[in-house]
Image (cartoon, rainbow, N blue to C red):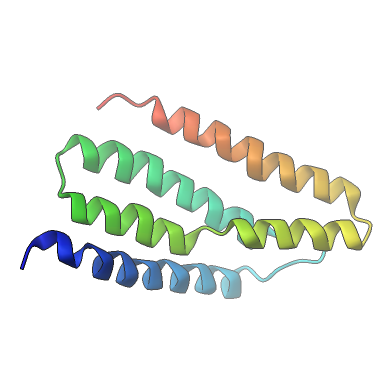
Length: 124
C-alpha cells in the first residue's frame, strides 16, 4: 500500500483531536452572552498553529506531506470554526449587542488576517 492512501485516515484522526480541543476550550471558557471568547480563542489558536507551525516551520523543515495534511487540514480544520463564528455573530445581532458584534467581527476577521500576515512573514 502507498502511504498516500493513509492521508485521509490521518486527516480524520487529527480532525477528531482538533474538535475535541475546541470542545475542551469551550468548556474551559464558556460562552458569554456579551462576547464569544471561546470561538475567538480557538480561531486564533488555529491561525497560529496553521500559519506558524504547519505552513511555516514544518514545511520549511521538509516534514512529510501526510503530517502537514493531518495537522493543517485535519487538526486545524477541526479546531477552528467559521460556522460558530457566524452563529455567534447572528446571536449578537439578534440580541441587539451591536457594539459586541462589530468588535467580534473586527477581532475575528481583521485580527485573524493580521495575525496570519504577521506570522506568515517569518523567514525560516
